Length: 411
Ligand code: PLP
Image (cartoon, rainbow, N blue to C red):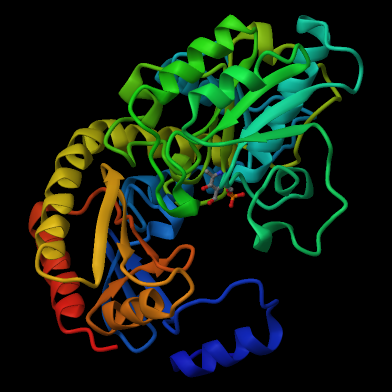
């Protein structure tokens, strides 16, 4: 094995031996704690991406790491061929936390979305009476639910789809944030599910108008359609409430979670539903070797308990307001940025430039030079999503860095 002594050495190895399916900033990280990351050379950064919102509780949260270690010493994996002494406890915990009757653990966010698709379709055939193989799931433009072949079949992003066909049938795509489009689409009696993100994170933190989610829920009830809410990125306090759906008092029929469920410690995802929906899947019809492992179960409970004990949703709500105030103040002093939008600590700034210019990328390079790590999502949009354990002072320090870089930026 090679000992990494420099960033360039690590980058060279990844370039040579790794698939080129990402385009990272040239920073090589070796250690993390709370809101901070350190590179191989020992330089410290504020993390303003949180592993795409998986590290809401902060890097290497001591309680979560301790839960991981304790459980790893006892039992890590049994498969679901047998019962284990942690899964039922974790299922009860998440059902009570989010208010559902049943839980189904998977690993990645994409897998949880796939699970929700299967549940919605099976429910459509067995409960709604949709003729075999005719079920339709309504999805929205600019969605992001993962990278599997079924999920990308519902994507409208060319970089997700191009070259990966043929695609899975059974999706109808409508405008996001357009209630009239939903009204039209959900009338089709073959529709079993409406599949949405409460805020479109990957697309660039697009927020629907207030009332859209509630209207979507009402229409789902009216037309006997399951509301499938993908809160993989927005859930677990990221937007200033435990779920982004909570802002409108919406209760999805299928709640899809991932990322920060484990505090970024290991891949754990989850679908929550009531019996009427979850029990349509019978033994042998769906599963995963690692899903619901004792290790994941122990980690999830601790990771969620940290969110509750540290009151991270409330703190995030308040910090989000401060952050957007600071960004709006910056916008009043520069033409380089035209907008900030978001909820809680899921925010984006829109760089005032053509969408495919390299300005956002170059800004992120300069943020990194000044000790703050963020990344553009889709051309001219930069997402800012620090760990939720960031303090108000630290947030101001980060806003100072953003101000300095933006105001000093030369094209
Ligand atoms: N759904 C949403 C809303 C996401 O943001 C993501 C990842 O960014 C996913 C699903 C996919 O999750 P994973 O990368 O764990 O498969």
